[in-house]
Length: 152
Image (cartoon, rainbow, N blue to C red; front, side, top):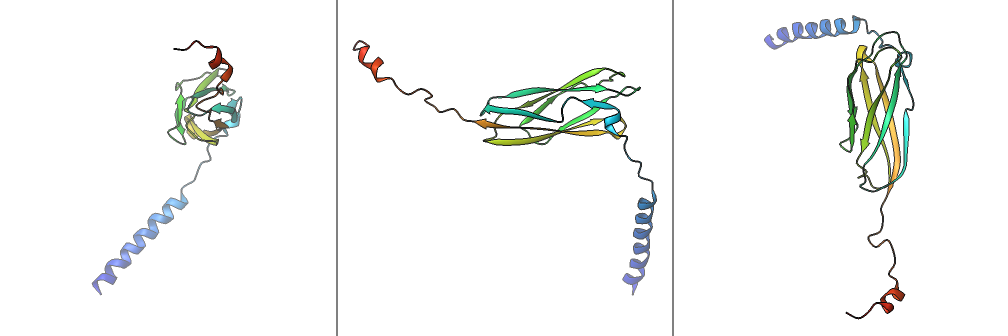
């Protein structure tokens, strides 16, 4: 009986907390496309040698009337390395983020980078491509060369 009496107030407390969290207004984040213009949202590396690092510059422009700051750049895996400065970036200013990929994915790859801006805005950037492996002995042996070399 005592357990039931303790459970009833706990149940009402949980319900009350849940009701408060659903009543709070969820303000939608500002539309990033009205603040920052991206040169590309999906970069194609094409074919790159396996294990060879590659990098591209993600170019953006502040198209708003206010300054904008980069709060964070989050990568999808450890194979991607971002290089960025937080800003602030003035209205009309163009700025870049360097996105490096180590090339250690065998075959086709598709990765994502999320850029978080001030005022709760964010944008997902994708990049993709394909790695290829070069053979250990890229050129076949030339028997004719062996015949003309002097004996050692």
